[in-house]
Image 1 (spheres, protein in one colour):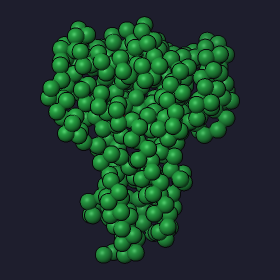
Image 2 (image 1 turned 135 degrees about the vertical axis):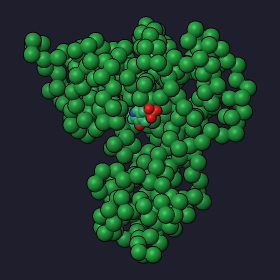
Image 3 (image 1 turned 120 degrees about the vertical axis):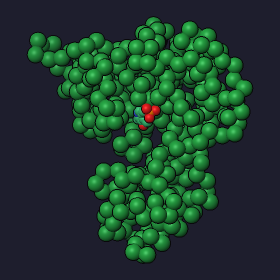
Image 4 (image 1 turned 180 degrees about the vertical axis):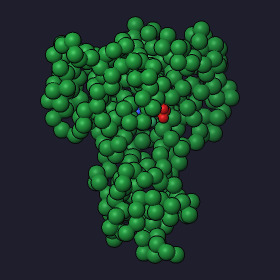
Length: 341
Ligand SMILES: *Cc1c(COP(=O)(O)O)cnc(C)c1O
């Protein structure tokens, strides 16, 4: 339950991968990749999309395709792009990442307005705003479509391009019962991962206008992300997209897990109920640090990760069923009651 990235390809996926029609995708000749890119673009409501090896590369290619060297990119200080992507945008793109704390928490529009400074020779010109939905470090929280459009509109008015890191945008859509376009209609580009809750072994899509995706193809190539017979991966990606409606089951299990954990002495869950598939558990009242809690779980073959100083993250996904969940809750109850056993 460390992450939804641990999901294994289904036997149906492995079969589709073995049988996939393939070609050289760097020449645009892989029919399975082409189909995946078309389906991804249609789901996001964009003209075109490009298949990439990872979400990290998708975000980096997006930044490269929106900006020039010396531009500033506004983003949340807790965003994946700022926090977990090895500073790639600064390294490869020569941009100044401008982290705004709590950008997704409240007063998003005001924070955007405050962060964009008027033209001045001292300032790197702000060109791009990146938002994230669902928000990883905030425990899979959803930014609602209205709120998000408001941020887009204000960002655009200030002359910013808008990129959405939608690694888990299908979780947001499933949770609210709305199409993904509710979140993506008005952004310039969106990246989403096929390899997390959707279950593909690898791969992400980046969608936008046709001319944006043309630039993205060049940037993917320069980063070494042009793959050859990648239809083998895209075949799994196509099946992964079909799994999107089933994400509601992961969300139901996350709520059940949260309810079960909250009932145990010393554990609390926040946000409660969990908005999507992540459960953030605070352990300090049990006398166990997150690290100790996780290693006791690990002794029982359950994986979770410390998430900061005070909490642990547990993620539900398609390879965790109701029985697994029961067993996890039972094990945690035993551990809490007798941590030294
Ligand atoms: C996982 C994740 C990414 C990066 O995806 P990888 O395929 O792991 O490189 C980007 N953004 C967010 C919000 C993520 O959770």
